[in-house]
Image (tube, rainbow, N blue to C red; front, top):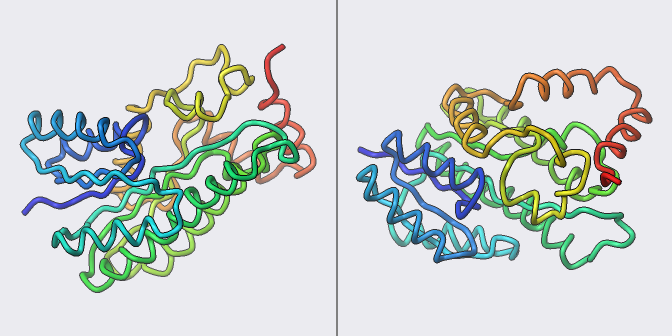
Length: 260
């Protein structure tokens, strides 16, 4: 019997590549994102290439009841989720006091509220079934404060902490929770967050969404609690633990500054 993976933010970037990886492993899919046309294109591609079943839900996950809506629809369709991949999320670049509050509140809803609600809903079923895997996409941003992206970095710190905590709670129940922490990645995130001209991205050789997705899938299947993509990223996130917080925040600010 094929297992079913629910992947949010599946219309582009890491989410799309995660869908391709899961499909290549023979898993049926539930794909959730705002852009139905993109999801339908991906559904057609994956069903044809891998002979799997793909169920599409077009939903704005920044809305507070969206996770419950998705869960209820899947219950009505009698679709049981074995793998939950909370990939949907976005960032914003600029000083907090100047930022658009509506956009930042949507970011908090998506990056924190919806992710947490999905975990709450599906984890209960996984515990009852005695199996399941969750992967929450955090970021290397989770390991330090981020001046000029203050809310985004803070939401990813939440994702990391939350994932580690609930992962420990279900450790002996046949369920694993993985926090995937990519660094700078070629995806739609960069343009959406207006980061193209920051020192973090401009002129850098950065990872592809496919590379991150393949790494994340392998880490989830192994049940790793925290998976930082890239040797340099792993080194830097470990070094942060030993550096003074005042220095860490200054260095991060410089990395996020625009190239002049």
